[in-house]
Length: 478
Ligand SMILES: NC(=O)c1ccc[n+]([C@@H]2O[C@H](COP(=O)([O-])OP(=O)(O)OC[C@H]3O[C@@H](n4cnc5c(N)ncnc54)[C@H](O)[C@@H]3O)[C@@H](O)[C@H]2O)c1
Ligand SMILES: O=C[C@H](O)CS(=O)(=O)O
Image (tube, rainbow, N blue to C red):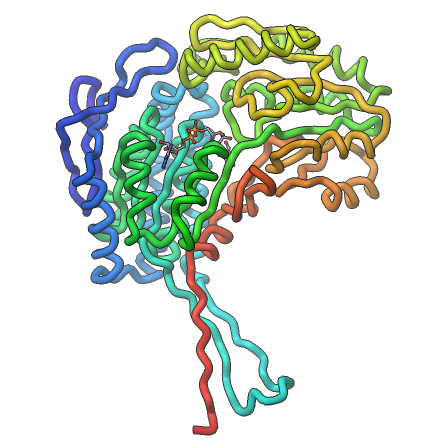
């Protein structure tokens, strides 16, 4: 990684490529210039896809070697975790402790994908009992889909890139990465590690630039067979409409909810919810945005919850004591300030927070919020949570489901029967029992329903989506 005054080059076809135009990346807390990154033009984007396509046709990449490369990247991430975490903290504003967790999770994501590369297999299809099939042996093989394009957001600038690069490579596909420009430094750092680990030429490229230029060009390039996108629902819908019949995985937004039921552990719920509603300043797709608490436990819950929230330390992401850092930009902090003020005008109460200093927004707890308010209906993607009481579990389920989104939901309850039933009733891609909706283990299938997306990530599941199944029928009578 270079210094702020030097230009960080792009990675295309195994070369570090310099361009005229740069994108300045700023330290999101101090506002100082952190790094200048070369911006891809039409030529570099086309070259990136061409390099990937050529690699796919001409460069062998065996499953055994995929394992070697991916596991080496995992080891390098672990070795360099402290330095890489500092990049994430500076360009992304993520508290250093959380940034370090992200790096270690990425190392794990690579290792999980490496292991999967050893186990790619098709199926044997039983035919003996099917009339008319005759003496035929039917089986399937799995082939890589072709050139994959990864388009990623700013909030987990390493692990969400890893969740696309590692499975694509494990499946034998070359990839073109277009990271969010404001946090592109760590994606390019990952390319350095992939190069050091010996990734074959052309299997990884990274081009930086705006969604409206670089992103659009990638969507229209017919040499790309598969898109894996994480980002906002608006861009996700646009991708789906633009790419036609080509396949895509879309990991989009949410206004995720957690229920604190009358028989749940209120003390634990209050502590975890205070952490997970405000982690990374609420800029997590599964961040706790709506809390529904049973009326009988609402008072002790609120007391404990507010106590924890008011202890959160807001400030410099490089300070290990910081819990909540800045938002990605002052513009985003101004947006959420306006949404909170609008909710107050419409009758909501702010119990704590609600104030802004530049891009720092104080952890904010809102009550008396209702449907029709942006802080309830839209994805806040900010350190803001609403708390609403309910009378019956049926009402709580209806409130959780009353959303255009459906990524994950959480419930605190000691009722075994309810724990079993509720995943069948909630309209989400993942249900977390006795923890908040903001939980992800990197190996689990992860993704949403409704406007939260299409498909599942987690190395084993992403690999499956990035493979083509070919059926082979052998007529044994010939
Ligand atoms: N479900 C998940 O797993 C998940 C994870 C993280 C973030 N997110 C979502 O991401 C959003 C926040 O991230 P963001 O602000 O970086 O999202 P964003 O949608 O603004 O940008 C994501 C990426 O899309 C690119 N892009 C924008 N317009 C494009 C276009 N026309 N064509 C092609 N690419 C284009 C951007 O440059 C960026 O690289 C939130 O909605 C959040 O919920 C979802
Ligand atoms: O922002 C949403 C991400 O999916 C979070 S995580 O990296 O998967 O935890």
